[in-house]
Length: 145
View 1 (cartoon, rainbow, N blue to C red):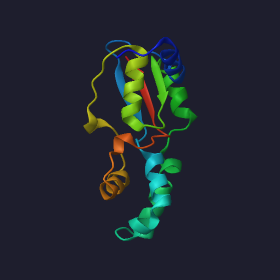
View 2 (view 1 turned 90 degrees about the vertical axis):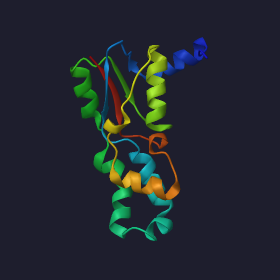
View 3 (view 1 turned 180 degrees about the vertical axis):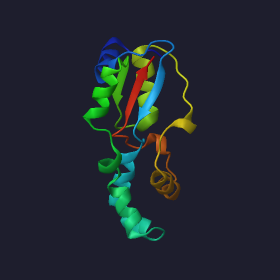
View 4 (view 1 turned 45 degrees about the horizontal axis):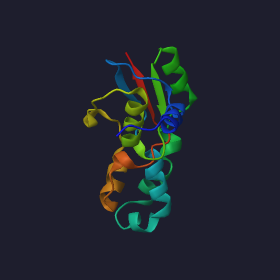
């Protein structure tokens, strides 16, 4: 299914640049930091049944401790990245779809190479969540040749 013109323009407005065939995808910073942090803040009691207070506090501060700052964006631009997308709502899977759709290219992703914190894996297992769908604020998807 193809997006309408208005939807495609809105999608392209979210992404800086455009992937080109042959570009490599790079994920800067671990995915799902924001989602893990939100869950840890809102579900402390449930997490405390299994984890220490220190572990839970680490989860709460993941976004601040490991998220990308403007420096990642600047470095990617200086390296002539063809496309940049600051991940957010919808997580890594949404970012992949948006990048491919806006660029009108197909892509392959090796999920074993996507950076993800062990804290995120642990929290997602407890709540039966897909970490690649959690809010990913702090991570950047970069297309570069």
